Length: 580
View 1 (cartoon, rainbow, N blue to C red):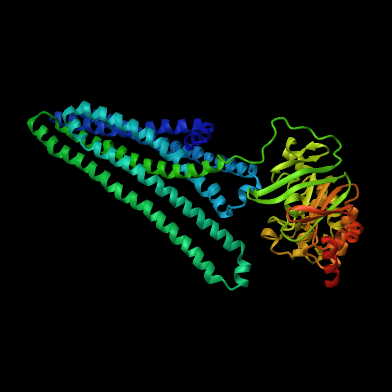
View 2 (view 1 turned 90 degrees about the vertical axis):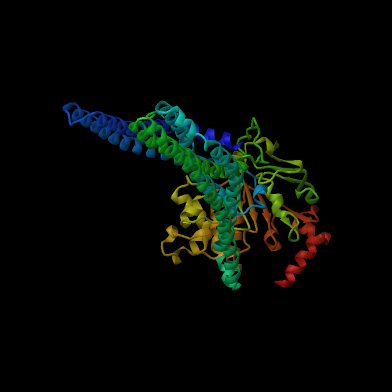
């Protein structure tokens, strides 16, 4: 999607407000053009009257009444113009933010691997905010000022075509200035927005990692990083503003030349009798209305260039093609969903030259438990992430109840899977809200049951507001074990036929681990479960244990079978037993 296409697609919803804005602005232009004409008429009337005749007084009264009505109408139109412009402008901003966030949700985890949260937030918030200037101000200003310029030019020609032609002499200078301005300013504003995104990214990292910064006494380093980004943004902003500061005086100088021409030649025409004094005064008054649209066009053009820089950065995200594609005609899952999974010669890589998983073949019957074990970094979590299609396989296929998961509606597929990830993510809110995240429609009794099974109720009495206690961003007020148990309760409440536990007991003490293990053993009855664990003692009862090493499965069998083979599993298990 190109920036201009994006602009018009967003603006379509607010055509009524934009039209009202333009119509009232044209009305304001009309009011602006009437006043000098009233003054011209007044001067002409006074200069042609030798005394204060009754007709002269009536004319003055009538002109004053018209001026009063114009001022009242102008005030009303200014209100309508301002309000309707902001309805359209901020409406487009809101719609664009939702559109960008919706696109970010469509993109797979692969897209986020080399992206900073602050940069993406800058696209959603800062870049889209520039759209308001474009919709509410720049575009209406360009249109209306162009119309004003045409209208004023026509009036000036009616007053004196000779003088009007002379006032057009600076126009080529102004046009050339605007062309050069456009070529230089948009890249400057685009670079400024990029630097703002970098600043947001560094700030986000610094605030999120404030504990680590304090723990390692790196406050000075963090201040240097943030300060550098602030200075970079300042320099990029000043560079863009410097260009504006250069071009504005050039335009004012060109307008000044036009006024000087009118003073020099207009006075001579008046002295010769070729131009009436009233017409010369009106010409001077209209001349300001002639060059004002030119100045306004400069400001509007500046806003257009700044906004287009934002449009281009937003369009980059919207033009990203999700690598997780939805099937055109999703295959419905057989009901009820049994949860039988099968990996058929699955291959996967993040980078083409670096294979993570190679020729993985696994048959996981419905209701059975598979444990994935092996050294760190062999792809256990990656293999589990392929099931809900966080990533797509690079070769082979995965089936659920004999249906290729790529043929399923992704949302329906993920609704059948509950996950407890190794890196627990909780949201700012209460304990209750975070548990109900697994199933917002669950009853209070169901929530409490899930919390009890996950042993959450063990620490609830110590919480100031029980389940309504606010836990802070990412659960900062909770211990690692408490966060892990809330995450388990959340997965329990979802009550899906497939359960993935990625180091579900990694952050709990031995006593809590035993309680959770008992709950998990009760929970997995009748569910297809994939357990990823480094503590091999927690997977002894799994129906199958697959050992990953060097991007492939080297051993598979029960706990007893693998011990008897005396391979990698036997070696790892023996080491852990000695350490215990």
